[in-house]
View (tube, rainbow, N blue to C red):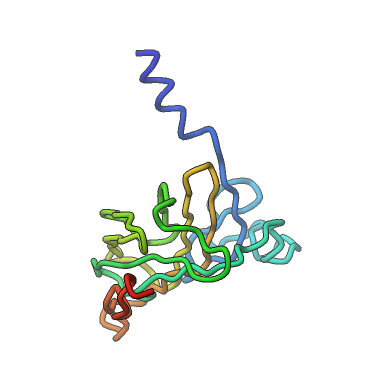
Length: 170
């Protein structure tokens, strides 16, 4: 029983704090740690600090998610890649986590991409979703506004998960 209890506590060893805008009017965190749903009290927009003053430099490469937009209620296949100088290898990805109204149904790490089966809940508000990618070797990278979420039937349904190029030709 003791080993089970300790195993449940292992995911609680690290914590990532992020202070930023709330796309689509979703809940944010105020200074007290309670959800700020738009009522009175301090929150990210009235803290007096610039939104981008996190103390962390963005990576010198870009997250590329194809498709980069979807509608509420959609389930689709997406391809996550990294492009630019010093971009990490996709096979070094340990896990992917979205922050926003996105559920990862399945994940397959390939040498040139991380293939994701994603679902957007039907009640998801319009906005964007951020991504946290953890790599082998205990490093991680944060990508802001990687996926745009649109209202259902707005004409922004998810497109194909690739751009038609053959990664073996590169």
